[in-house]
Image (cartoon, rainbow, N blue to C red; front, side, top):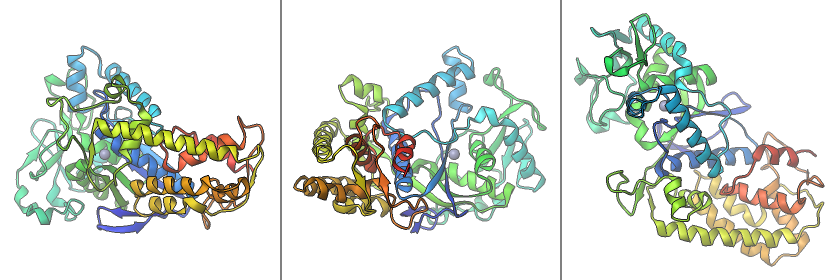
Length: 446
Ligand SMILES: [Zn+2]
């Protein structure tokens, strides 16, 4: 599998650096309201990446955090008259419900920032000791970006004519700031009256962690100092990911992420999505207009992740038709199989082009096209030919670590071959909720 890496601006092979498990981290949602379809474009593409790796036989470890303490969560919990914990728990639950509707695999680990305050404090202490951070008059602590010569490599600061030398005395205490301003960023925010009850003790006085720090601390906890891939929406490249690199490399000394996967933003009707324009859609908004989460998912994977996706309500109607066609094709194929079909090939047959698209920089629109072409080809096949052609769907790619080439469809597993075939087909591009774990367990029982 090859994927474009933001850091080196080249396509790179995705191979686990530890030789066994591909370990990747995704910046998760800030739980202060419902996630919108722009957020979900990122999460859906990350899901397709994981499924493609797993279908190809690579074991994965997927970590995605929950941001439950920052400027926005504190501000809005107070507006809602709830404790921060109560407020963020409600929105976390809502996020999980939406993820389930969209068929997203649950991350293996989903750490929350408030559960990792000691790890964040420990990282700041290390940065202070090593001279990369300093305390200010109000009990806050800042990262000194001029102390890390690698600062700006990911976002190519030099091409934006921003130089570390210009940062003398510039400081940013808010969690988010403009992409053309370069400043020391806050690691620990000294307690302020507007934070209410949301403060913790630290060696620098009471306060709370800055937003950028949590990912670095949780990555260290669950993935160590060097891991395979870091991912998020393109808007996180600067400053968030740049700051994560600075903190982690200075505190831990490892390589941090070996590669970076960024998903480009989404447009609505050709323009920016915003609350004031009334075009900031959530799954609930779209459901109220009669559209299913499967249709939303289909639209979200309909453009290549490095290109902006123009979302329109019409595209959801198109998705409905496409999904109906695919479902019909799958049903027709399923009727060609006797209940206990034995599948032995490891090729993808007529669906090879769909698979090749996915493994070539996660070309999801190409894969969708390939799926329709494959379906047309298999429609004319006999039962045996179709079984041989589709065996690849169910088998791991050749040379993969899973290594199983003979696959037996377990009898009596809820509809037998037909239902598994259907599940396999959907799992390739993943627009249907498929329980991959249960699915794999059944597939690899031979
Ligand atoms: Zn992050």
